[in-house]
Length: 566
Length: 69
Image (tube, rainbow over all chains, first blue to last red; front, side, top):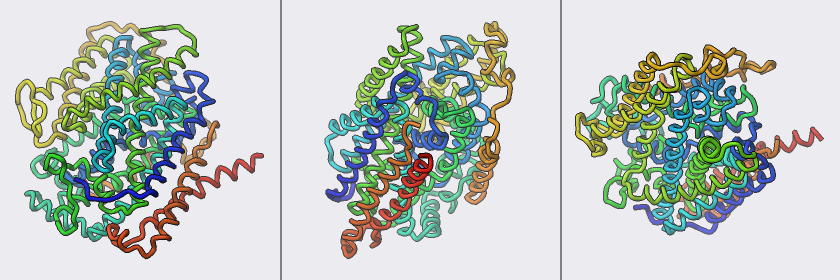
């Protein structure tokens, strides 16, 4: 249920102007798309402030806007752990320790790194699972956008799917990865300006931060928790029973902080690809760090609205209703519902444009990661090796069309699941969590063998599936039995990730001692920490552009934020 | 560099900012329209904010380009 409102002509004008710019950027870049490197790798000449913003913008899609808003309401400020203990340390680790191997190895994708470091089958496994994951992620973004337009604006669901698919297809087909990256930067600024007035007005409505704290204290007590649970990060994480997420600090630290966040930010080609498109090694290492700066403050835009919504719902006179079609509270719709609640015509057009921008950047990010992995790691490796670059450019363009077409199918598959966000979170636990163990061992222990990596990865993924099948949370999982019940779906995915990581790690280590290393030290130069000379910084870099200095500054800010909101 | 992305970003923000600012000015006395926004003319404020952000985004690359010529 969304409040009654009407979109004025001005709202449609704002949306139309935005689409002209998005398509115009793709069209202007078309003439540079002469090689597969230009099209699939962005030409490797993009300044790091652009790749840095694209790095976080590609991720600021449906999952973040829906998921973080919903979690902000359900769990409160604790959700900020996804940023402060999750993304930020992982992004610093990626910049300082992993980027030199990604960028320096001449691999064009994450699966290709796995081929250079381990063997063909490890690459194949990752290439296929990643391709499937990106198609689903892109389809889910498309589905979520179309459903949103259907509920909010009463647009036809099928037409919305087709329209969003065509727009994303046109600008990624014309300008490739570069067009996607440039648009992600544009979309990032638009999302910030589109959501910021919502936070300001919403905070005023609940009486500022103090008023918000007071109202959320009442909510917390009402639900049987200590007052202050909704507005603190670590204070009530001593045990799983004292916070609504149902997670204690150990599970938070290892499950989210270590396995899930590092797995996502350090091995997911969708984000790593942005850094690899930077113009130099130093630029590639700066990319996650530049992204980390605004990333630390994104909770204001996506989590605080959820908290405000929770406070407003406790005072019925404010008139905020979050009832979904099935009569239950639909937390996913918090940000769109609040846009409609507060924005007058004019700004509403901008707010809806920001929502569309967010979903489309998520779609385009997945499509451009998919076409690269498909062309280099599937087509060039298994279907037609040894063709001319012109041939692979055409395949890349075809893969873009193919990727969008399959995403449409995935969108209709997603329409059959009742909770698509949990579904996506689960895919990350299956794919990224074990992969991070493979990468840690591969990059920092030169003995790790290809066979060990492959079987470790396979059993890690199997362990994730098995754990999910044997446990239950919020009625999900438990296909094979119910050994334990977790208090929240989030707790379940943290533990799924931890089991997957641990099994992958242990199996890989054990098998490394039992199998033969087929790679010589020469093969592994530039791929493994101990065999790579450490001369990353170009001469003449200003001190504040040095990755280590930036990392220290970012670490200090995020520790300060943690202490303030302890 | 093939394209300086700051230029289209600056342009988009200025164009949308001008639209919102003017719309805000035309609706200065429309209390019904702004009732949902606690009576604040947020079209006007957001419009001005967008222009303030868009101008340096557009002008800095244009000026450095002129210097090079």
